Image 1 (cartoon, rainbow, N blue to C red):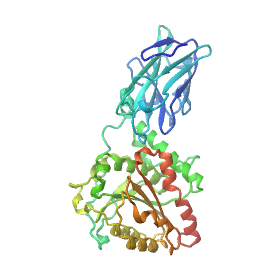
Image 2 (image 1 turned 60 degrees about the horizontal axis):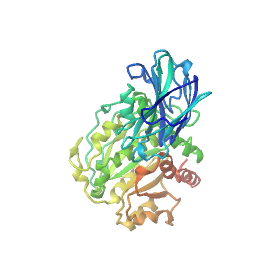
Image 3 (image 1 turned 90 degrees about the vertical axis):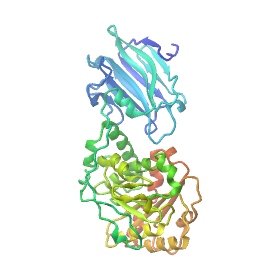
Image 4 (image 1 turned 180 degrees about the vertical axis):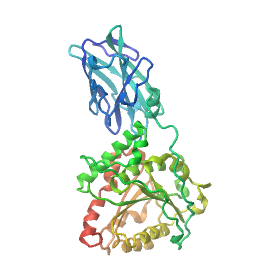
Length: 446
């Protein structure tokens, strides 16, 4: 049969269907289905079929693979008027659906087959590709090819799926003044609000924290996909049962202004939260901003993430009691590194420091000495270079001699948004499990 052009439709002969979506790939181009009433809305979030909820309540619609669905039309409830087959780009994938080569849907029944190539998409990051709908007591398929530039959130809201429009208000936190070295004791303690303990991991190693229950279905899906990628890396390295304190350090120098303005730093934070959930006892993420000075921010908890970023991720101004200009505009890594080293005193468990910077390290000798000093302490330092810059001493740290164990890793990324979650977590966690084994052998960890 000829392809269905945009807006074109055709009758479906049978009731047992196989739907294949060319271009769909979990973690990059996600496949989903909405069961819709005659209002164009789902009855509830249970009518949203996707990776983390792979079957409709009645079982008539099932996601059988990242790019495939099975549909038993005879089992679709009478109150469902249409099935909207859709895709959305993962947040980590740049561009739009127009850049996905060969995107389209093939609907196959016992005696017929209909292909509907996507058409007319330009800037959309999510789209309904086809609808399978009732008409005159029978079923038909239509090539829709209509999308939403705002991505999955716009697509989900259009069809009545719960999406958090307003970030959950964060609990009150104490004022966090900028620390002025050499007085790290001035850094305030963590917030008084304690995070509940993490839930025991599932059979596949994926852990959860109670705060996830308050997220929308869409946000839980994204978080779950990322946690699975982290769990996969840890399992591959034999570290699925490890627990560690996670510390995130973010460069706030003037040269990072574009990354803050473009939301790149915000997306980095979002992608680090699943690492903390998988590794930290209560799933919380410690965070510092640094330049010539540093500020210790309240711990990040997943249920308050959006509000937390709105409150604390800034380049200038006074926010939540922090004067961001006082942190400075150029970088000096010594104060923030000393602060983290001092925090390790008396600590028994491991710490993973995730240090994001655009480079410009000038105090090569001092940094080298600190890394050597820290090699006998229970922390692994993973540096990530952002942008196409000269990272100087960072490229040499891995080769440094005179350490108790190899306690540092480094990799640069020209455009971190272009690295998918799986690859980012592989790079981020590649050396940490090896350090854990070496640190235990050296008596650094018990």
